[in-house]
Image 1 (cartoon, protein in one colour):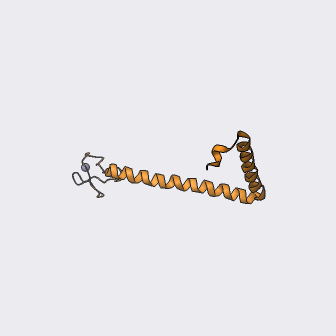
Image 2 (cartoon, rainbow, N blue to C red):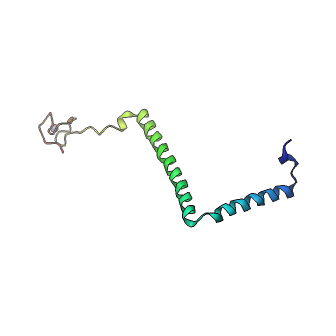
Image 3 (spheres, rainbow, N blue to C red):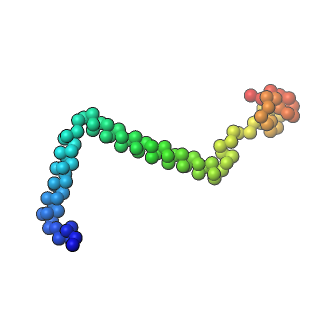
Length: 97
Ligand SMILES: [Zn+2]
């Protein structure tokens, strides 16, 4: 049998108040340090969730458009030619920054 179905509103109210008293009793037993620690642990867990979600988003972005993660191709400031990775332009010999 399902006890929840047979509970009167008064009984449900009493059960709720009992649960709240038990929660309060647990919190009262904790020292401020323990409460702060529990709060920190919760925040850390949330931060880790965010970090792993960000990692997944980064992976997805890389998979969607690999060239986004690549360094921008250099162009010669003098002649505008695509200059590759060298220190000097392959076309006009100007030094590349
Ligand atoms: Zn050049």
